[in-house]
Length: 594
Image (cartoon, rainbow, N blue to C red; front, side, top):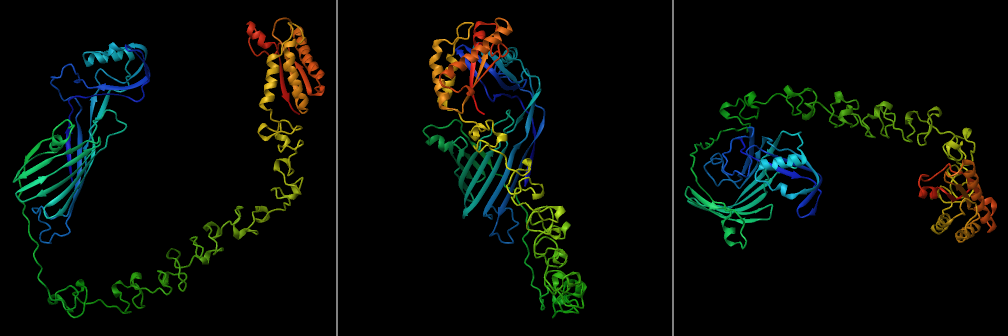
């Protein structure tokens, strides 16, 4: 395992990003932004106008890390060569993991900051600037900088590495190297890393070697190269072959060279052990064994310890030295073979549970059968191992009706309830017929028999549908007739005389009401505020009654026509305009039901 600690310093940096930009072009020279949030910042030394600038170390110094570990699997290495680090061919598989470039740089923002781009018809040529300072001034004057952030952090291109080197045969190896970029999601000012994966077969001779790296990166780019080793000298490229053979080669060329300087290792081979004579096989040389023909422990000079009860547990380790027992119980007996010593077993002749002092627990509720009032039904300790089988809050050991929900005051048994509505018969106003508690056990009434209880029925005397709260559903064709009659109803100016142009629509309305005897029509008369209140009230009354009389003359029952009048008291528009007053002069018609 290893780690690298690095001191990080930065020369310069800049960033700009936006998550969601809404914009439009009025023409090719004019641009509009709509509340676009931009992240923008740069260091003091960033300027494209002066590429030869002498950079200073301006980032605040920070610490970076590289971490890694390597494991070598050596199944065939002899014992005397296992510790020899100078043998490069002794492993079958070498695996390594690493995390590289952990750290980040912190820069002070200079002349820049985040801003919200919001403006109409902005000339595009204002962004054609010669320097970063000019761009800063333009953005600040046009949009204004947000002052919250004074610095920003640039994360290094942290990556996770996985290396596998497989020793295939003799001096032929296959190496896999995966580098996965761990680009941060939240930090926008970071250096992007590119994930790439390489597979490199190689031959390692004593005096020479050849390597053929094949690489593909996260952008789907493929690279092929070759590296040669002659003695200590190494030269090669990871991209030269692909650059030569590809029709459209990628930009960039990698070349590397180096010299391998060997390090001399000192190691010591493991000396072969000299065989010893040990007749009783207790691991102690007969010359040092006080009992060379009887096996015994080293700390007793090769002689066995005494064991009075001959149970295989020496007396020094036997808690029951005069009674034969088991080794795992330190020489103590266990008649029922449940793992609990007889001396500690409350049920020594019946196999049980160790945690329950050797007693059984048939219902597995953690309470020994000896203490369980309900040994065949799991329960809780607070109620002596009994459950609440019927879920009525009364446990079985106190419940006179354990399979039927009941009441505490009736020892867990229910009261009589012939209709099964949950209300005991002594308090049920309708004990033979189920009903809700709110209605004293009686069912709700439904006078019109439409399946909607009268308490929820807006039309309790007229059958209707549930989705219309018990009222009949007015079909679209019928509603169209009502709307047409209302929209075409006109009177002579200042009078309660219906104009002939309204007769057709009123005739269609009369036919509908005759065919629907359950329909009642509410006729509401209204006026504008021109004139005095009393005369307006009289006019609205006369007009409502005029509509009633017309429909009644066409065969509609008078009881189904309900005129009402409001004068100028309920305007639906302003009376300050002719159009508003015209809307207020109206007779509204609405179908209602009992």
